[in-house]
Image: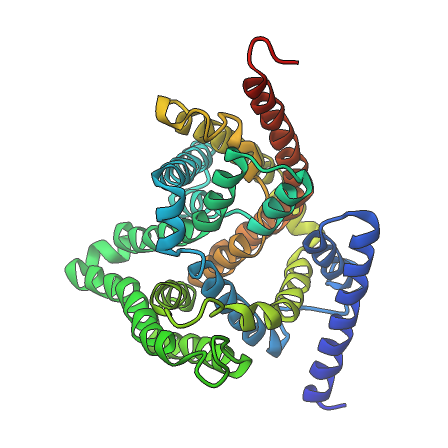
Amino acid sequence: MTVLASELITLGLLLLLAVLAEAMGRHTRMPRISLLILVGFLLGPSVAGLVDPRSARSFEFISVLALSMVGFLVGGRMSMDLIRRLGHLIMWVALWETLVTYAVVAVGVLLLGGGIHLALLLGAIGTATDPAATFEAIREQQRGSRFADVLSGIVAVDDAIGLIVFSITVLVLHVVSAGAMDMGADFLLHALRELFGALLLGVLLGLPMAYLSGRLRRGEPTLMEALGMVLLCAGLAQWLKVSHLLACVAMGMTVVNFARHHHRPFHAVEDIEWPFLALFFIFCGAYLTLDAFAGVSTLLLAYLLLRLLGRVLGGWLAAVPAWTQGGFSRWGGLAMLPQAGVALAMAFVAAGLYPDLQETLLPVVISATVLFELAGPLAARAVLTRVAAEESEIRAGPGGT
């Protein structure tokens, strides 16, 4: 059997297994991302030994494409109309949650002896959330509230903020490294070129896409338009040696804010994104090995506790000003625990930049993703229920029933 035939058969079987995992998730209410990662682990080197992403030629292509789509859709949530409609409260809380979580995780890992690179990277990765899980918890509540509206806006924009923080972190690590200090200003210029080059590439591609998309079918971009632009952006970013993730975020932000002739510029990508993400999550699970898991168990526990502390503390601090009361609960940070694609995207980008951290970084983030996907929605539902009860009491007033 040729290598190509083997790769095609493997991908086909993995997609069918992903369908079964989704069906199981609907019956057990287990998060589908956790199930897909579990499938990958069972197929990986530690158990069945049937899938090894380290040697699979298709994994790099699938991961770059899937993460580029994630970046494009994350950027698409950064609509100025949304920010203006929901006010400054969303950006206030999102910034507090992001920066406090980043600081708590980074300082905590550093104090535990994790090293500056690992500490800052885990701090940046800790800022990511899973908007889909939070949106689902809000939908299940089936009761509108000011807090639910604010929470929806926060999780819609904080991944984009987290990706920007992650990109700046990578730049800082380049600058403070020993090699950067030796090369001085030249290295700093190179790092700045990578950061702003990605942003410029996304904007330059996003402007014509915003104008041209949705012209063949009035008001609705076709799949070929959307996928073609994502592939073009990812490919050019790889060729120019800039971040394909950040470039696609910038392109998504540009399209959503300049495409005035239609309102669904991301619909086509949303339709095709999931099969590639499903394969990506399975490959993520296959990266986990029992030896690697055992080697990072202490760091994993620390990361879980530090991120939980950062979220809770960020929510408390964000709710301190009087003008936020009634719009954001001090327990709101607990509703933003789930992590999924963006966190894994950051982890794989970081692992590519710092291969010596790969065997530490990936097991921690992949394992934490599973646990946060399991516990996060439960925490979000609990917070939404508590806030709804508090709002009902306020509306009833002292003499209410």
